[in-house]
Length: 307
Ligand code: GLV
Ligand code: GLV
Image 1 (cartoon, rainbow, N blue to C red):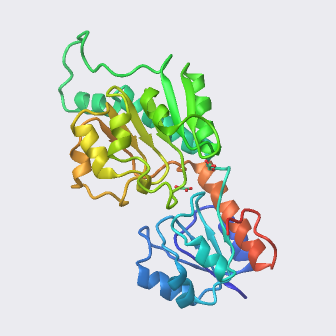
Image 2: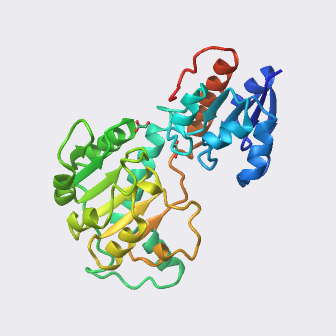
């Protein structure tokens, strides 16, 4: 019976469907398997269910051979060398579609949270610093009639656009194949939200030059991958007041150490990569990942195959 290694416990019904047909080896700890453990367990397995925390490259696939399928519990697959998998004939699957709304919700929550200074206000109250009402206290950014610039026009970028429209924002976008020029978007947007996959082309897409083009009153939101942003440049832009604030669901590295210099920057809101973290969304992601594995192990095409 084929054996599947799952790099984290999946507290969802999908796991039972997998267990009905296959031997399942689950990494029970909350923290990811260290690389040596990951390799050792993968060597005992025929297929893998991985999370964004696991790196799968050609060397790993050779050493773990024979792995016949990899299902990633994510829509992004930058943790997997797709070319290496393709060369070895190993199908790789992802979980598109089901996390679109949840991720756009987090992006919009970050946008509202940083523009209206939600966590800052909460801290002020809890720390007993709530001063009497003042017309100039905790002023933030407006949404209505402001421009939301979306970089990356996939499912999540478009879902973010719908949210912006719902709040009366003007929406512009930039992608490889449509929309306006990136520089024009950066110069004209009051909010810039990043929704591109991480690829060699998008690594550090946002650097010092890009932050410098943004309005000093503009906010930057990232729910894609930390690697799309030059984090030192973002920190400098916040410290120097080149932009008004930033909201991040993703950083480089993850987890971001509590003493990382980025966290000393002003007007920064960071949450720990929770874009898809709703009960229904995670359960659906597990379903899609298991569907991919069941299909591949039955010799069929994965329903959501990326390589
Ligand atoms: C999560 O970050 C994903 O890519 O699904
Ligand atoms: C992800 O699902 C995207 O296409 O944005």
